[in-house]
Amino acid sequence: MNQQEFTARVGEQYANEFTHAEALYMALPNTDKDVFCALWKLEKETGLIIFSKLSRWVSAYKYEMQECETFAAFARPFHESKIAHELEAEINRMAAAIRTAAGAMNHCPSA
Image (cartoon, rainbow, N blue to C red; front, side, top):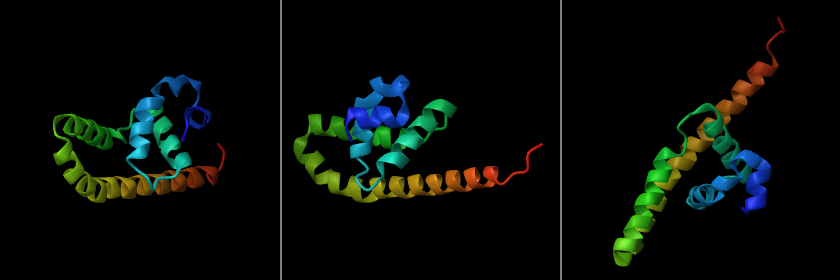
């Protein structure tokens, strides 16, 4: 995803956060751009904590790379297979819940 795609999906008010968002998005290679950006925007607008665990992992991984490239190369497959897959599953569950809630709201009678 490039900066223009990110900005188009989340709005100009978050355009300056692209670098951080891109690092998180790249850590979740199987996550849809639209779902990622919708959850990014939702987190920013509501204060929900969606990407904090992933953000901590990305920061820790960058630190590991700087401190010990050999360890980082060894540890990356574990992190990708365990944490990234858990987070992708959680993102998919959240997206489904949001779609369900939105559908329910569309079927509520007006007051």
